Length: 351
Image 1: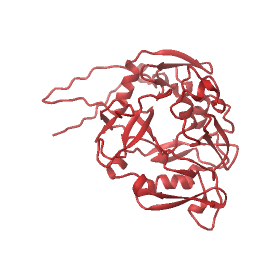
Image 2: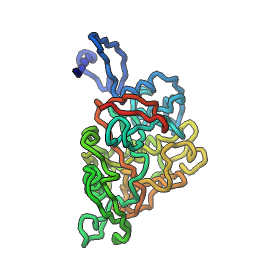
Image 3: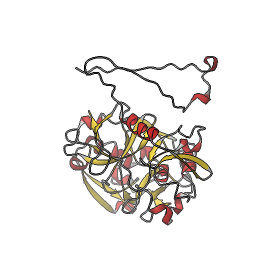
Image 4: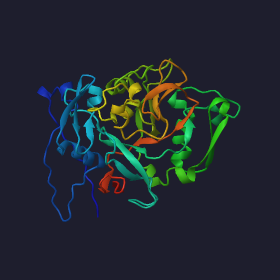
């Protein structure tokens, strides 16, 4: 039989005041388990974190901010957009051309029967953030014809966007055939068989965390990764837009794209990621254009996307069709059973 335990650790601050300087720190301790067949299972997030923490690190600088990178495992720490004092105090992310961040997910039977390949973006607050390796189609951020055939309006509010409803509706349930409309007046349509491309079962659905997603934006991508990371978590939104949306399935952020690059080689702002020092040094460069969750805060209709030449640009409208890579956070108790993270030997989840 299997018994799980939760370990709580109490850390006294200075005179029990628990100052803010204690936040985002790491510490080590030893835990011993006795008993026949006793195993201290690591979570998936702990497995990736351990890879990073145990690897030799280098200190690099980007936009005058120091970062730790571990080239041997293609992992780096984003320092929460450069805001932490500790160089290891932020999210741990995969970066570079082809890191070993492949994972089997959305399997018919776990760990490896009839699965899809997904990619690990990194470790965020004790959870893995992952994205589908292949697009589910070219779709609009929002086209209200999908809600009401008499409408063709659109905007860049993710909380009400038709793509958000699709990903957290029929894609999440994995049922039905959907005709999804994009572009001006909904003139272009895409048929989506959710029985084939949607989530396959409750085992998969129950792995996904319901979390608040930040909806902050900016009106330019002439920014470095650390700057857009902070703006995404800020309050700069188009008038009346929410700053938080709670749900299961979203898209990558502009900062996810920015930090996927090898910042020891790429020193450009996101809009200039077409530079040869950047374009060839990210695993997130897709076939043409991939849509992000980050919106243009200076417009009620503008969205940001990464285009085929590597740049992260605006100028796109919420009705324009882009490649869609569903993105989500796994629950914190998910663990890795086996695998090396390569495309030929992906990580396999224990369920």
